[in-house]
Image (tube, rainbow, N blue to C red; front, side, top):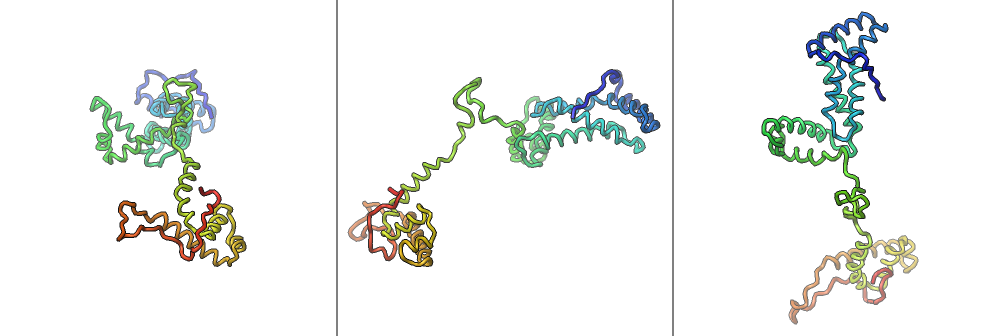
Length: 303
């Protein structure tokens, strides 16, 4: 929603805070006396104009954080209008003491709901706001930008909390993956997205074949046939049982034993040949029981 303010009757430039407060109270008296009349509406409009600069000042504190300045001002103006309509003069509270926290809270809520491209936890958001305020205060006293450890002492928190909040500061407007990696490199062939590592499935498959190949070749012919049917052709246990002429229960037991044998073959290290002597026969990888027939026909897909 866009609010268009009437600037034909701007707020007097010579009004200080006490003068603005007195003028506000007089206008509220007029608005309360006139109830829903046009005079009451005009009085409320004038109250809004008197405090527009205050709303703009609050909105400017949130500039350069990923949300357009015009949007921030509209949020502040809209909240100001709502505050004027709901303020109760009889409670004895000054209008500024009621309006400023309301406008500031609306701006924070707008950032919490609309400002984050990647939304961090609420405590991180609050910590970032506290860090900004602490940084401004410390810059005035130190004459330089404060270190994270100095900010942590100022806020009575840990350095890890400060570092975590600072690391999430880019969540408002993260860099595009299409951004060139070289300055001014419009049209550059290398982007940020190209620099992100990824998992190469073909490489993983090649590594699996290289590791499993020797272990599978040590299986007997029937075991290799079961492995081929189950893991390459995706056959069910019943289909495997019909193919090799056993029961489904036997197939289940055979699969469990084959996988156990393969796992043991992969995890049992082979002893180097130079350590093998006549008194220590060469250590063999564990062979599956009942595997008298040792064919050398490779399973499909395993070289």
